[in-house]
Length: 331
Image (cartoon, rainbow, N blue to C red):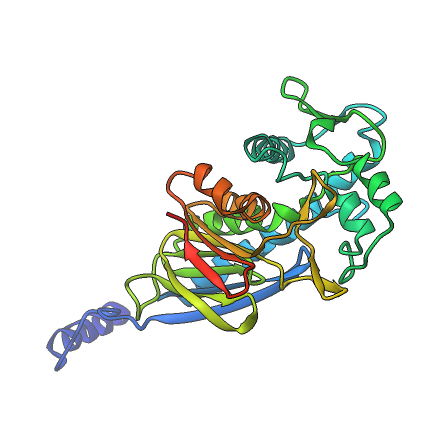
């Protein structure tokens, strides 16, 4: 009885307390930032909200998804599913998870739409050119010819009914380097949204970025600078990402010089040589998987091709290799 009386007395006092206001009528906006080294790069996430525990949980789930995808896709891990495909698919069809099968199917569609400029079998070329784990080297022509024999997305045979992957010849291998980060960013975005995040920025290195909503101080979205490819310390353009992704491929990321000429890691799978002509390409689309995949064909095939094959709903910013820096949005 005493407990009930005390409770009622406190309740009455609360009613007459001066300047009484509902709890959390104007909760403070909090900022949380975390990062993770995975898939050969650094994934960073910044989120805003009012519930720190909810934000922390969402971010941890998003980063855990990146770890899971590294276990699934990495060709540096001999026990990953994609490594298992590379080890055995030339001998007989390999059954894979629906997730891997769907992602490989998307990669084949990108290859078909780009005339082979996008190709996840480019790994042997990346290796002979020294870009697999290094900063590059000029290979012998015989090495290039040998690698080219094992490159070509048409060597991948997908069976939707059995959900299997088979390679038409030995030596073929799939490389997630041109697609994995974009897919991981999209998965992070989905998880953050499912867990109540309405304002956040996810980056995979500096090449694949997604802005959820807008930061508290800028309703236009998340401000991102596009680097000057001849001076990466400067920018040539700024964009605002609001529920959009941006991916960039540039010859300044990995390259080497021979005889005064720059050879970058952006390989044309059809010729066996690094693609000339472009300095950088940035693509803005609703999905990071699309923006990351399409930077390569636009870079390799050039402005004229890009203008004829521009993805609906996308924006494309190109910097061409001329006597003077020539950067502009694709019309």
